[in-house]
Image: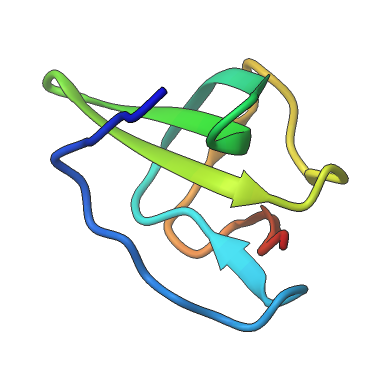
Length: 77
């Protein structure tokens, strides 16, 4: 299975904190066979951010309100 996306991939060291890109609401937390642990944050105005390949121990839950810079998890392998 080959999938592409229109997002931006960034590289970082495993275990590095991942922070919310803007204020919003955590709308989904799931585990995907290709993208790994994934968090979706709705920011309003049809804007969302998606964080994939995270460590399994995320620090937020669905429905949480987050602010710019809130730690939501860490980079997985």
